[in-house]
Length: 312
Image (tube, rainbow, N blue to C red; front, side, top):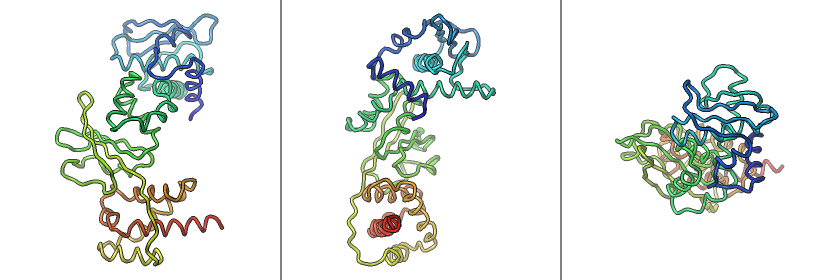
């Protein structure tokens, strides 16, 4: 966590708060809050930070409710972060070019995201719902955060493998989010989720709507791989490539696995197998290779060789 996110987490701990809670009541402890129409382009203004009197927080009442809530958390960040002082006119989309101002606005945004959707709270509830939609719906209802803020925080935090794509009326992907342990979603934009079988390792799929947006989510699982083929991994890979007419992919396949291992060495063997297999999924050109029944044998054999070398 970044230092300003830790400040937000400590603030919630100090006041024994977790979602849902009254943000206005919390903000009033640190400043006076007023909702008015701001006659120029600003989401909020905080006056007198670091002075002898309570700072004054002014929120633009013309904004949507979710934006007003995020702005209030953002302004509270300016007050709590000790190196933010004076009067700050806030644009939470951070359009100004001044470097120091942009840094302060980015820090206040990070503080606000953690204050509204605390990391510890999110990790604690991530496995408590039967569907991914139910999880997202609970987060939105409990925090009052916007969809965009919620999705960014969710996918920067959750630990289970899931990809969620925003889709248009025809089923084409217009935006994509993924958790760190999920397959890549880099080539999803523009693909049609109705007509294409995109992933081969997902456990379940969900379609759902939030407001005017439609989504499709793919949920993945950890693979239990038991080594059963007595041959070296090179012979196993040779058979896979020959049977799938994929010999041109040998170099790419051999490069991805050690790269994944080197960035995740702290994981268990079982976790590494799952992460590596998913690293090949969803890329298109590797589909027939990943779907081959011997591919998990190639992965576990190659991983065990790398793990053994790392121990020596």
